[in-house]
Amino acid sequence: GIQVEQSPPDLILQEGANSTLRCNFSDSVNNLQWFHQNPWGQLINLFYIPSGTKQNGRLSATTVATERYSLLYISSSQTTDSGVYFCAGLYSGGGADGLTFGKGTHLIIQP
Amino acid sequence: NAGVTQTPKFQVLKTGQSMTLQCAQDMNHEYMSWYRQDPGMGLRLIHYSVGAGITDQGEVPNGYNVSRSTTEDFPLRLLSAAPSQTSVYFCASLKGVGGEQFFGPGTRLTVL
Image 1 (tube, helix red, strand yellow):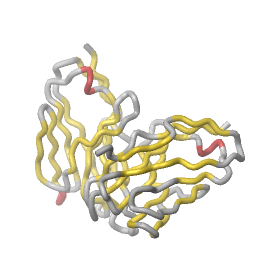
Image 2 (tube, one colour; image 1 turned 30 degrees about the horizontal axis):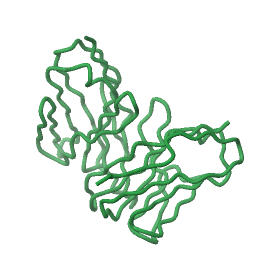
Image 3 (spheres, each protein chain N blue to C red; image 1 turned 180 degrees about the horizontal axis):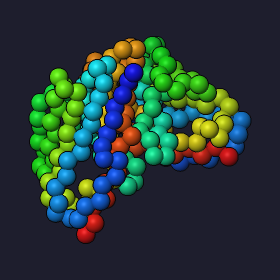
Image 4 (cartoon, chains in turn orange, purple; image 1 turned 45 degrees about the horizontal axis):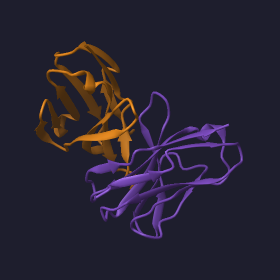
């Protein structure tokens, strides 16, 4: 079936720490995206990363499509990084041009 | 560009009432979609559209109708609201086939 699984579900870190969030996805899911949902509920695009590695400031992401996983790295965490991080992929089996989301990683950065 | 806009931001309805959630985008994207987000979960696809005049169902379409008369607008209609439709609704537009999706700010709907 369609699966997008994220780990860990919750993560509490001190400011300045580094973290790695993981997303595993099934064969029918492609074109991975990472989002940050801030405490106000807004969904912010972080990376569109079907494969390879991208970096944007303190954040970077790597998708290894052949092994069906993607990683989001956050370095030197800041309190503003708190929120829920979602990965989502396009389901290619049913014709629906919509994203299948994981359940998210809830990240809390403490000062 | 304003990107993807949604109105209203908040809405409270009584069971059985109807309403329309508005969504507009100014990026000339062909693809638009509606999602709902329930507490502690990711987003689930309700309906989507691949262009003006073309719509189709997603994962959770029951209780919702959509239409797409223009490229810019994709309204979501609740004909008879139920408490199970209490959720946060997000509209999104898609840059191209299999491309990056962009989300609106969301509408928080409560059905009493």
